Length: 224
Image 1 (cartoon, rainbow, N blue to C red):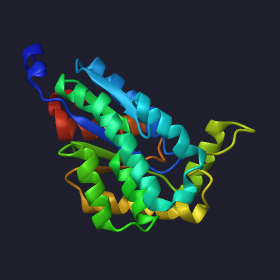
Image 2 (tube, rainbow, N blue to C red):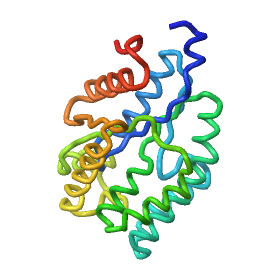
Image 3 (cartoon, rainbow, N blue to C red):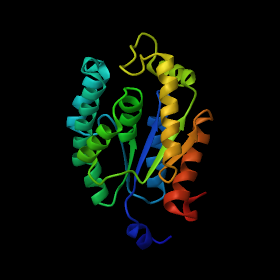
């Protein structure tokens, strides 16, 4: 593909989702780097966080200090962080023609505070209308892994003596239900979502992700 054709390609917004320890952060970094190696301007980011205001809220949300606010209060705070993230980082990048790869986005609120927190779907849709406007991911890669495996990976990543965050500290039953919530999202929106088997090696998962991005967004010229 010529440089002129590459520059004419619209910027895309890709999100990676899944439970704790599935490898989203690693794979988001790898995907953004592979896009850049393919001649596509791309940045990686994360939620909660990704912009100065959102990073301040990240510390608050993951500390567990907001737990007493309940699922609705936490969802509103996540939405506030998301608004800043979109306004300060995601939207400007897309407008400049840069692809954005985000470790988590709105599906995390659907899964954590929606399905597991019992929030009304209408409330979440209203919150998304306010926070997202017309922005939706072009592709969402949902990394799927048994909950006990993900939690073990998360613990190994933290290292000995490091406390788990607000969500990692939840019960195994919570994380098993979280996995189901993500699988349900993937099944409900197959045009947007791809379920990726995260039990495989890091390289194999990275290749599966690249194959999905190539097929859905790039075409066969980048599939190798």
